[in-house]
Amino acid sequence: MTDSPFGWAIVGTGIHGSFLVRTMVEDLGISPGSIVAFDPHSEPLALWRRRSRNIMMTHLRSPASHGLHTDFRTIRRFATARGRTDFTLPYHRPSAELFDDHARTVLADTWSRVARRVESVRAVFPVSGGYVLSGESTEATAKRVILAPGQPAPRVPEWAAAGGVSIPHIYDDGFDVSRFLTASSAAIVGGGLGAVTLAVTAAERGCKTTLITRDPRTVHYFDSDPGYIGPRCGPRFAAIRRCRDRRELIRAARRTGSVPPDAEQRLTAAIRAGAVSEVRDEVVDRVNAPGRVELIGRSGRYGPFERVVLATGFADAPPAGALIRQIARATGARLAPDGFPLVDESLQWTMDLYVSGALAELTVGPPARNIIGAHLAARRMFGAYPSSTSSSSCEA
Image (cartoon, rainbow, N blue to C red; front, side, top):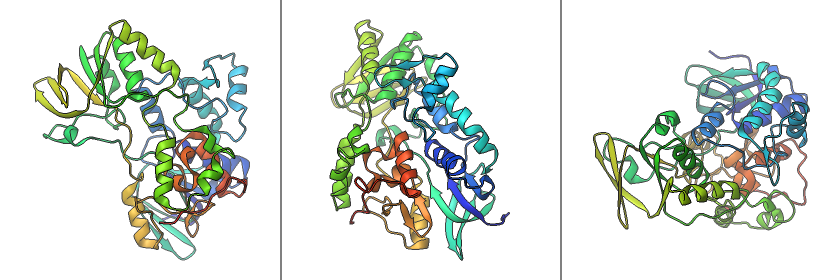
């Protein structure tokens, strides 16, 4: 089935796709009937909700000013109007429940008027006057396309995928946290915020929990250096010309595996109480037995455990990698050596095809994946980005 051409097609209805669509409709006056959105999940933000629930997230890492509305004051106003105080200090980070309630409110009218295809996009081909997006069962033609597919795939070590039975990851679509929390003994491999919050929650539910971390944890309020949002560090990033050098800076500034102080305090208290055991080692193999898994590290053996789950973050690869490679072949659009799109200052990758989120980080910089990254992307795409901190595409 192919519809009449749309003005815009959005691939992804997560944080970035939702923010961009709301901005286009509510702030820029673009007709919602001219927009079509593709996403395989049942509703916008469905993947974010499932993942935040699976790690038992209590509060966001972003401050209350970073929401899904261009007015930075709306989450606090929303909370005040309802007598809610579920923030944590400093920075007034909202609870996951408050953020979600606010998101549902500010997005409901927008998404109700936009055409949605609950399916993945398999291919995008240039045609006269735009692009054809081929989904699993339908096609749509649009003059302009925005790719906002979210995070890369979860990072899965080789040992966890070997042996015929894969160890689940907390960000897998099929991970069932309720089943995990009923285990009598469990191991969590990883040391970031997802690992820490899940470990503490499991221990509180009576599960004998072991947290196995390869590297020492670092403590930061935010998972990305906030200096790169604006003029303090933005020009430093913009001045870097080589993609490899920008990637190196992004990795350093992203603070992967760090946790905010409140999560670290909860874990420390659980360890002192004997509810959580922490092991510093790198897991390299596992031994399966009926109903049990034993983990083998470089320094010892651990378990057996009734449940084992990975909390090893996301892969160092572009999200929707197969689609990105297909578009590059079909359009001749350039890729950096690591496979990420090389986009211009407005986040245009090739004519009238734009990217957001992780796909835009070689131009936006370290904050690209975060909620504020959606704000930065909208400013660039729609012509309101301050020239003092803007950066153009890097050199391969």
